[in-house]
Image 1 (cartoon, rainbow, N blue to C red):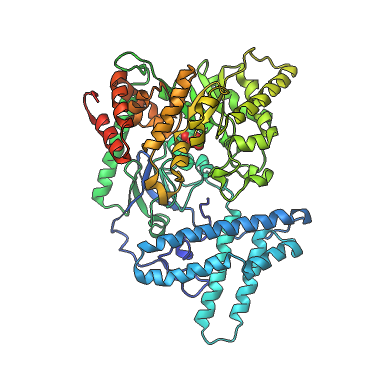
Image 2: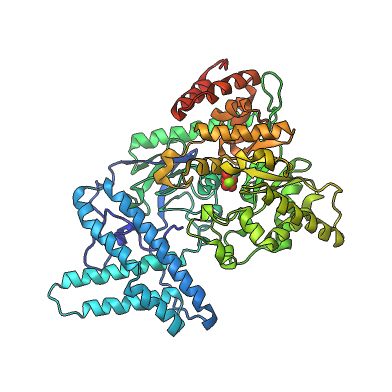
Length: 627
Ligand code: PEP
Ligand code: MG
């Protein structure tokens, strides 16, 4: 997570700046809040539409005691690294909390700031960490056991001091325990914790949810999700949309106020969250639920209709697939194939890497289910926010200080070609069952495609030698265009690649230097920024000049407001989360290509993103799309 299975905000002032530190280690009281019946409203980023009403399930409840563990001598280095990583992550969490202090009353700020500073110091080169590391090496203890032992030793020393200020001593000892608990939570925060057994109908409230955590949620079981962290186009948001779980991310203040069992009503479109909703709010939410169901039924009727513009141009609407559980949704949505199968799901929530057979077993049912419709399988895009346990162990060099700019996607696969070879082999083994394409993520230079193709050809020969029948012409090998470098070099990359898939999520992130999953900069994340649109235009034109297939598979493709713009740029293939297909199809069926082209020319003349957003909204709302 880094969802915290540790003490709830009420037990941890660092997790809850509004809670005041008292004598420790007793649980701290929550700040006074209005009577339970008084409604409190919060505003976040609506990332997955739908209304949810239900009791809070707060994953920040205390975990059961971490069991004492010893380690083998050979594991010492890895364990010390694990502790260092947990300390770095904890520092980052507290640093973030500090930036949030500004919203609190001045009195609370004055009290909490020094406390958070003390925590940050304790997470640096402190006695706690130095000695915990020593205990790992000398006593062969697991990191969490070493931390617990050292915290107990430090607290005992503090409490034994000759000082009349007993409350002060208690508080200092408590602070040591608090920081030890945070470290332990982060050490134990394997993403594949029990996300599966959440109470039916609950609303999951958490500081943060990783994409791997989100992948484990059962859509039929939980009503909704609300978190403090997260951005609209991060992978967690994408995963929640894919699962159709109404969700609001970036909802500041909610975890501090909400407790397990409290009632919450949330609107995953507007981002509104009401804690202890009034009768009036509840009635409104229930009406919203019914309206949402009616709208879904109405759009469902479009399933069998073609995605044809009013002037008879066909637009291919495909689905993005994050996890195999979505397969039935894709069939129901009327998708014409899969434009992006993110294979990260296969590598998440496990300690080891899936072998070739395991990959074949995962891809085959998808290819079979899609018949002759195309299935675009993207090879592993590890990195950025998509941390994966198995790879963190296997490719330690890949965990740089800035993973989004590090060994992400194709870079990591070319560094570890055995991973790419295995994945190519698995995909080739299912290629004969249907219509498969292979997509390379995070390409920035043509040479990466050329190198990947060399490996691809080599693997194909090997697979043939093993007796697997492969078509004469191998499945197309395409490149994601999702960095400004790739977009501007699209004409050169087009000479190496068989098709392009434009990833607007990363393209916007890297162009604008805005982390797509980071709530604090979410307001700056804007795929309508002219720089992003110009890069897209450049890439589309490079592909069209060579008559090479090009699609958009970023989140832009699933927003019907953007459909005229994408068609106007020359795109005729869009891949999106399955539940968006009906809305986008409806938009396509109301548009004429000429109008879209005229409208897009107007948009491309603009330099102000706000003006572009206005034009896009006006065009989407206009009954006649005359542009
Ligand atoms: C993108 O970046 O737009 C994309 C489709 O890839 P992902 O969201 O998986 O990074
Ligand atoms: Mg991407």
